[in-house]
Structures are given as C-alpha cells and as structure tokens.
Length: 397
Image (cartoon, helix red, strand yellow):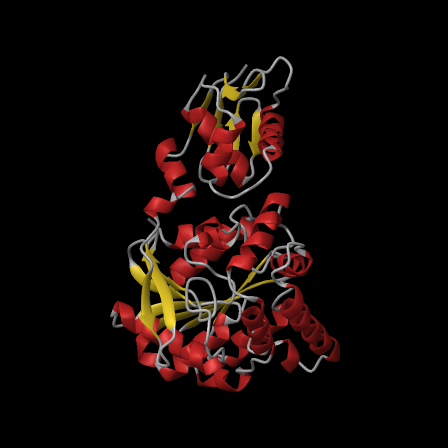
C-alpha cells in the first residue's frame, strides 16, 4: 500500500501508483479526514463541515466517499484508506499527506467560511432614498463587482459558482460587493427598478469607500451598468472588466424567437417564482450552470427564492432583456478587458465579441466553458482569475 499526496489547491492525488483528480467537494471531505486520521467522522459532521447550513441529502457523503475511493483505487470491503465504521461514519486508515504549503485547518477555513467570520454588511442610500447593502472582503487593490439580480451578500459565499469568484478574488483584491436594489439584502419594497437607478446604485457604493480609483468587474447584465457608469465617471475607474456581459438584451437582438422566449419567461417568473415546485427556477439554473451537480442545482434552485419577490425578479428579467448600450461602447475610454465563455447560454459569445469589438482597444479572453459563471474545478477558471489579476497588474500572492 503506497502513500498518496493530496494537493489542496487543485484536488490532484499523486503516488507511485499513478495520479488522479478529485472534485472540489471530494477534496474538502478527504482533507477533513486527513486532518483527523483514525478518527471516525459521522455523516452529520462531514455534512456540517463541508456544506454547513445547506440542506442536502446525507447520501452525498457516501457518493463523494465513493469518488475518493475510486481515485485511490480503494474498495469498500477490505479498505486500505477510507474505512466505513458500521453506521457511525468514516475514518482515514491509510497514509495520505498534503502537498500544499497551506495547512489543512487554514484550507478548511478558506473553503468553508463560517457565518461568524463573514465580512460586515453595511448600508448606504441611493439618490432616491433606496437602501443598498454592501460589503468588502480581502486586501489589496480595490475591485468592485457590479450588483446583479440574484445575489445575497451573506449566502453568496456558498453559491456553487459565484462563491469561487469571491474567495479567489478576495485573495488579491479589496473586493467590494453590493446587492442590487430590490434584491438580496438591499431594499425590496417600493423601489424603482430601472437602468438609470442601477447606475446610481453603483455610484453611491463606489463613493462609500472613498477610493480615488477602483477597478470594476461587470458580470452578466452588470456589464452594461458598468459601461454606463464608465461614461458617467471615467476618472473613477482604473480598469473595466466585463465578464459574461451583453450590450443588447434578448429583446434587442432582432430575433423573434428570443423575444417570445423572454415574454414567456417573465410571465412564468411573475406567476410561479416562489412556488415550492422549483420548475421555473430550474430553467434559470440550467441556463446559468448546465454543468452543475445534483446538489449544486438543488442549492441554487432554493437560493433563488431568497433573492427577491416574484414581481421584482420579473421586472429585473424584463429590464435586462430590454438593455441596449451598444451605442455607448465606442465612447468608453478606460482600459477594458472582456471575458466570455464560448458556450454561454445566458449571454451568447457573439455579444461578448460585440463588446470587445466596439470598445476602443479592448482586450478579449475566450473561455472554454458552457457555464455563465465558471466553477473552480473547470480548467479555465484559473486562467480567468489570472487574466483579471494580470490586467489590473496585481501580483500573485
């Protein structure tokens, strides 16, 4: 029986017997077992450590243990590495060490940020009196992520895709985030959900932190809001990064089918958003993250209900589908980087290329992914983070 070495950074296992790779959650579980060799960890303990307050099936632990055993060449019967102890749980009995210079305890603190360590949420008022929730994490050059229609400043750390962005970018930047009006922890009731007011919200959040200049990461429809802010205050932006963005919403691209799909989706959201049956939310989950696992899909389906009431979400969707800032793009004067997945179902690659072609001197990075937001386990995720860091000229910590 040989000794395996686990790389905490990418989930790769290596030994004289060969090499294997683990998914992020399987890496978390194996790291937990390695941290307590010989100690029996119950399914409940593993669920709490890896998924925290997310309600997922205990069977997921067994599924990921199976993945780990398969990677190790281990077997449930006569196990040499991961032993099932009756109905009590699992324990590590074989020799597995970690390669990363980061110790296991700090790895788990980074991967599974506990609620009591979350950054403080603060509030500011937009120009029309609407309350906007915002927060900051990490240290370094200030990078603001645009508000969106399905964010929640506290829950986003657990978001299967977006949480990976927050964790990694917080290692290199003072990362500023805010919940868009009508959404998340910002004010829900009696709000004017309009494009100009969204630009106002970005403006007051930037002002709240007092930096002379900030870099802005405009995600999805936030790319268009970021473009409008860049024209309003070009001297406040050092770098503009547009990821998964589109200058024209689905109703503005001259495609009748997309127009009808938009109309149908808005109506379904308005009538069915908060239902226990997640069918309508599943449509959006599939669009945003077709590569999601079963538990990631379940989490995002439930998460969407926390982001806002049906009427707000319907208004967001209609507004975003009517966006058209294509005429503004040639006026952008700040350094711009456009990042886009090649098979994005939310924002077609052609829209990303349109952004890059119309904004003077914009750089373009095409990612190999079907997902609107990339998962950490995807090969191009590291390339994407490096592209952002290198564009803003931030050293790799």
